[in-house]
Image (cartoon, rainbow, N blue to C red; front, side):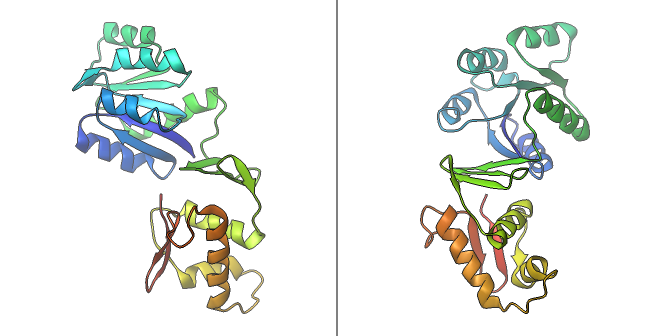
Length: 223
């Protein structure tokens, strides 16, 4: 999964785009020029989706500012749709320019096209806070230091991340983790693996931010 920054002051549209993209990418939403500059001090991103007409600044200038410090790819999402507007956008350094209204599936394709050009495979890398998972290499990093997981811990982690928008019932986790081997594992084994995984990936296992218990049901991923 790629980390995308979405800069759009229309909150309804911002929420709609975020919802449509969140299964494929990690989305951070902001609503202004100032918010963008602040979040860039705290996080790194693989691509930015920028509106041009922002309440406290201009997206073209914001794009130029971004490229003074990094090579962050930029796609403009804007209602400014004349040929001259598009020329100005590309002169400012954008990688693509999409006029509103747009089809969300077209947006997804163009995001992935830009990510492919820069060598980032959005389906293989997942980043959240200080945790990074490389699904291709089956590697997990915390604060850029690799941590070793057992096969069961890795399967559990992968399952929670890839179903991060829903609660995973305990019975479902047990059946998916051990349905092949059929080792008659009881629920205590799941508890043990959850606790071990928390100790490896959480800053404070007693106050988990990633593996969240939903009492009486199961677990969900705290992204």
